[in-house]
Amino acid sequence: MPRYANPGSDDSVVSFQSRYDHWIGGAYVPPARGQYFENPTPVNGQPFTEVARGTAEDVERALDAAHAAAPAWGRTSPTERAVLLNRIADRMEASLEALAVADSWDNGKPIRETLAADIPLAIDHFRYFAGAIRAQEGGLSELDADTVAYHFHEPLGVVAQIIPWNFPLLMAAWKLAPALAAGNTVVLKPAEQTPASVHVWLDLVADLLPPGVVNVVNGFGVEAGKPLASSARVAKIAFTGETTTGRLIMQYAAEHVKPVTLELGGKSPNIFFDDVSRATDDFLDKALEGFTMFALNQGEVCTCPSRALIQRGHYADFLAAGLARTEQIIQGHPLDTTTAIGAQASNDQLEKILSYLDIGRQEGAKVLTGGARAELGGELAGGYYVQPTVFEGANRMRVFQEEIFGPVVAVAPFSDFDDAIEIANDTLYGLGAGVWTRDGNTAYRAGRAIQAGRVWTNCYHAYPAHAAFGGYKQSGIGRENHKMMLNHYQQTKNLLVSYSPKALGFF
Image (cartoon, rainbow, N blue to C red; front, side, top):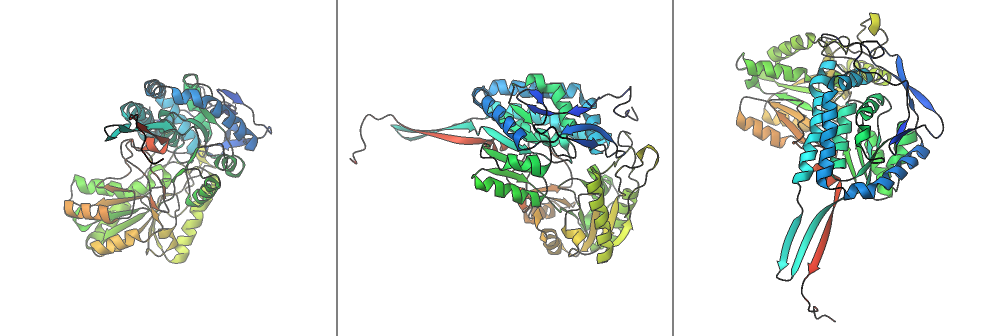
């Protein structure tokens, strides 16, 4: 259909409850202090539900439930866990449209992205880890004829997971699927900006989950996130969000010597070598799409290609074509399937982006297109919309160095391979990067030289389950996705066994 109906209307494919409590021990539980907060949709800025405002008391209740469920769930066979994860995936697939609309309404992103990417990827994540846990094997080493070292994978126990607002359901899947597959129970805190779609998901799958295996505490970072991350009762903390908060999470974890995985900020370079424009063909068209990928999900992606580095030989022509492609982006109602860019996730994020548009101008960066709030009017009046914006400037500028998390790209030229790598690596971050070239040798050398955890080569913004994702430098610790994620949610038990009846002879 060309346009999905707004939630709350008679023909909508999804219905939100008027209020969401915490999900603890297999049931909805009101907040201990009786407080709630309004959750507005970015589409028009109007509240559409209210959500429990969690505090330390609610976190403790959730941890009680998770600890009560942990022994039985940890002993559940990998086969049974895999069956449950596949059943979750089946339920999600059967309600794909409802989940997609819920995510778009909660976050402001275009429905075509949630239909084609967010929800299918989330579904695939549960299926992938259902397969990965069944294929995982331990180890055995024969040290000598009488001595054997066995290595077993065991769950950590109760894990804390704090997810961001830019991909509410996909980030929940990234965290939950490997943790549950590995045999852990979870206390999950959604972002306060986008808590509702997780509860729509819960409504679909709650009856599949043993009570206490998944618990959801809503609330704000200081009030709910900090008590969860600083608790001595969690075995691990997994966090996705901005780098400044990640530093705090590390401090909380260090107090009790708890492991963390952190997927943090980025300022990703997108490098276009001269040979990209050697011919007017499908590859050039693909590269121009790669340039405009800064606007995907309204730029609210930690790996947003927010620095476009273009070699001088084709700089003017490629940039002109990139600007033309950017200006063709359709901005409109997020539930319209023709919309390519929707609303920013919150008013706070909108104001942050607008402030960076001012900062860029003050620094002397040139606005080539966009550069302002998008006033769409009508039923979208009051929504949080920003025009896709292209700055031209130098890598020393703040708009090149600081994460804006909006549909903003800063463009600069480079002279040769070494210059490109120097500019690309001149950042505190190292999460993602893009390399575009027709030359395989250049592609390989650039990919190895760039200091980033993922380097897309002649593509961008692909997030398959079987490819490790994570950052260098201040972009994080550990990885998401890939079967290696099971190791982040497990500990290794070594049984060192002697089958000899004889003493060693030391005493």
